[in-house]
Length: 266
Image (cartoon, rainbow, N blue to C red):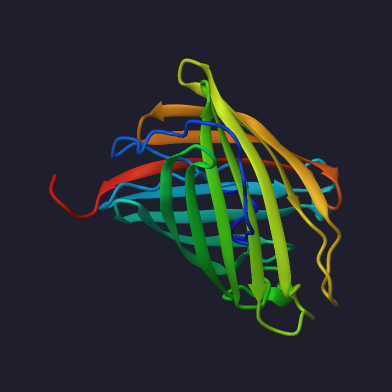
């Protein structure tokens, strides 16, 4: 799961990735499939009847003064409800100032439509709804119900995996508390480094939004190592730095743990 992104803007429009090939249809059940730490997600889904958790912590403004820092702890639960469908529930704990608060909750279904497309590799769509459970007045949430759609293309480039996302979010309300429309694009890459160590790197962007709560566009770089402790458990850590726009510098750390089978034959 993204350290900062999909709970805030689980978003998209259409995507075309040229080339041949695509990823294998699915990894063995019980194998962790990290979506974190990148803003992007991959097109894979948790095996039917199995579930997985992703959790982390991010410190925004980590390289500045203590008074300018804010913290978030995202939590994502993923349930395999069918062979190509995953239920995703995302929440978070926010500490924008002196208070620790619950953020908004996002619920979505990732549907893997293609596994070996020449144009799109492995391709999935993720429609979602965000419920404004956070206290927006204190900086923990947008205060608006939102619907979003994320388009996801994943493919192998030798030992490396590439994930491309495009997103679109539409919020209720008049735009005074949060922009009524927002978009997102990401290009994420990852692969093995040495033994159980790996790496991930991503460039992502949030184009400018309009209205009373409109924000300037931003582009940022995220990168860091990963450690596969065992097939069901992957740890990650790293940094986020701005390339353009108002993205704060940040540090993050977290884990992805496959929790086993919930239902079905063993």
